[in-house]
Image (cartoon, rainbow, N blue to C red):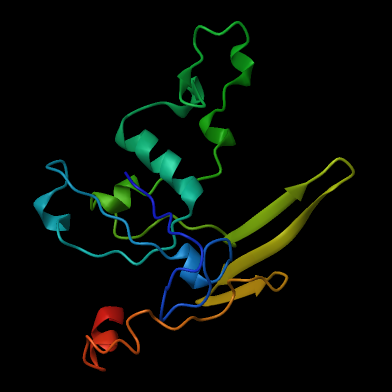
Length: 172
């Protein structure tokens, strides 16, 4: 399991936005599953689904046959003095995509209204600073203007070492 953690100002063409924004250039990342556990029928397939970072825990817990109710922060809480601090599956906001990934189902789990919110907490209050909602193929983003909201020229553009049409090939 890995994540994409590129430096600020990375080029995500043709997607808009960068790290820390809710535009597609920040939240669309490629993932890879490898290993002999996957059935032949699902090997080499692509999946273009909306999977949030919080879904990763629920998916990996199901894949490992781990009951999340006895796991808190990666520690076994069954021997804790106060096991009520454990986070149970009902407390996990992520959805498991495991059945979809192994080909057991053809559809992914869905939320009534998928959204991403960036919460800010301080001494006096809490509020949502930015939010993205997905509905019927549309995405609504509400956030203040930020440094990495736009599009940037690819470092490959303008290079005399590459033919002018090579940038399109890299992006595709």
